[in-house]
Length: 167
Image 1 (cartoon, one colour):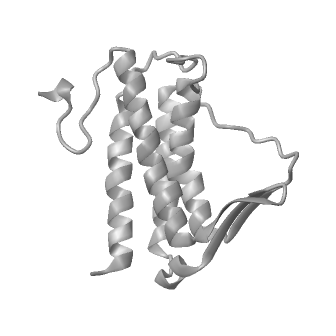
Image 2 (image 1 turned 90 degrees about the vertical axis):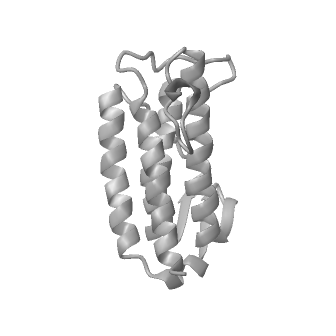
């Protein structure tokens, strides 16, 4: 089995399913929508999905560490529109695909770290970071998006088979 090829194929499959779910968002959706007061807004959720598949994935491949000062002010991405979201998603996924194409398989065993204010939040092999914090994390938030769409009474596309809306 070609380990590198399998990781790239998995990323491509999950990104395609994620793109399909993002495309199901109605053009006129209210990105401020929250299904519960403690929930994140729809706009922030889909922005985070785009960041995970793109910027975060590329950073995992091209950097050995991401470190912020304790007083770092994170500026989360919240798209202005569905069109802006899809453009950013497509652009950053293409950048990640370029990084994957040139990535050395030996680097999967190297350490990768994410720290804020000297506290390590993630300190693991790049392979585990890729699987947990890129692939699994993207799938997790994609599923949350499905719940938001269902609560908004919008059709949900199938991901691992047809959805109830496609039968």
